[in-house]
Structures are given as C-alpha cells and as structure tokens.
Amino acid sequence: MGLVTPDFGLVFWMLVSFLILLFILKKFAWKPILGSLKAREDSIDEALKSAEMAKDQMAKLQADNLKILQEAKEEREKLLKEAREVKDRIIADAKSEAVLEADKIIIAAKSQIESEKLSAIKEIREKVVLLSVDIAEKIIHKNLDSDSKQRDFADSLLNKMELN
Image (cartoon, rainbow, N blue to C red):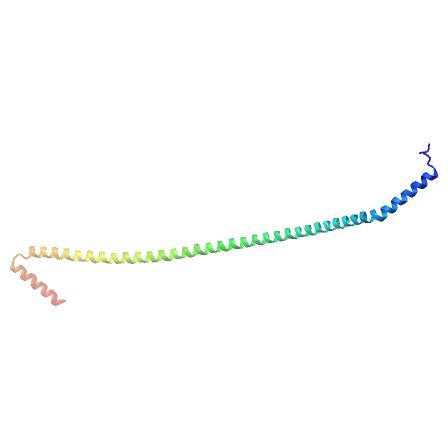
C-alpha cells in the first residue's frame, strides 16, 4: 500500500525534484520555447498581414483590370463608330462622284447625239439637194428637147428672177 499512500519523504523528494525540474525548465527551456512561440506568432501575424495585403492588391488589380477592360470596350466602340462614319462618307462620296460622272457622260452623249443628228440632217439635205438636182436635170432635159422650149424656159426664169 505504499504507492497509494506515499510517505512524507517520498513526497518531499518528489517535490524537490519537481522544483529542480521546474527551475531548470524555467532557466533553460521556457525562454526558448516562449521565444519560438512568439516568433511563430509573429510570423503567422506577418503572413496574415501579407495575405490581407495580397488580397487587397488582388482586389485592386481586378478593379483595375475591369476598368481597363471597360476602357478598351469603349475605345473599340469608338473606333467602330468612326470606321462606320468613314465608310458611310466614302460611300456617299463615291455615289456623288458616280452621279457627277454619270451626268457628264449623259451630257456628252446628248451632245454627241445632237451633233450626229445635225450631221445626219445636213447629209440628208445634201442628198435631197443632189437628188433634186438630178431629178430636175432629167426633167429639164426631157422637157427641153427643142431649142424653142429651152428659150421659153430661160425667158420665164429670167422674168421670175427680175421679180425677186
């Protein structure tokens, strides 16, 4: 039963050895253990602060990325709008040039048609005159076979000329 109810000597030596162990631990072990715990706590706090700063920087970067993306979209829309305006202006200029060119071609064609029409009328008149002269010559030849008919015709022409 000695173990269940210890004597005073055993308790004394156990208390002395416990106090010696406690003194040795306090002298040599507590400071390094507490220092390492403090260093560990500081490194964890530093890591948490770094993580929080990284989180803030990531949020800032994401906001900047969204801003840059929005600006890029706006710039793209602006460029597309300018491109459409340039395209519309080029098409309008091309249409107006085409209309002007068509008008010039039409005016030139009308002028050429008028010129050819006048030329054709002149040619027809010349042919009519030649045909009329040929016909008149043949009629006069046939009607004026004799000298007396020729003299009578010449006299009538002279009389008509004097009247005019």
